[in-house]
Length: 157
Image (tube, rainbow, N blue to C red):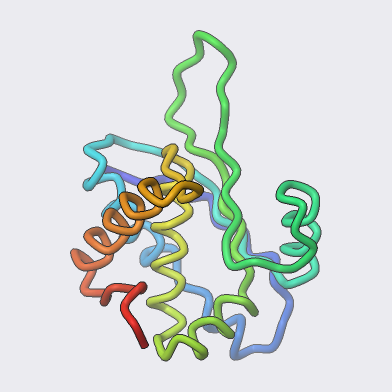
């Protein structure tokens, strides 16, 4: 399993927030844990770290929610008959991650890991609209994060 990550750092905030953005090696480690759990070979995806304005604009345009959000997933759909190991794009809002991590009493790095895992599972077709889908997706996230030494992100704080 090997994740190929196209990293885009578009966030222009304060230096502490920029410093919180995980290095490529961490993102690859987290992604490889997802690929291992899903028994997938080499897959490619883009991660774009953004501020609140870009996140809010995309969230409004694609989900009809006029507020920034932690992670947005945009699956790649290849034309019929074309096989390519490209999963799609993740857009992660740095200020939202930092704020949520603080509110949830976890490190920003653990929250970034959770959002990478969560977003990749969306790119692989998992969803959490229905209760049974949410339970299955959360169980998968918890199991993957535990292999990385990261506590259950859904446990009561």
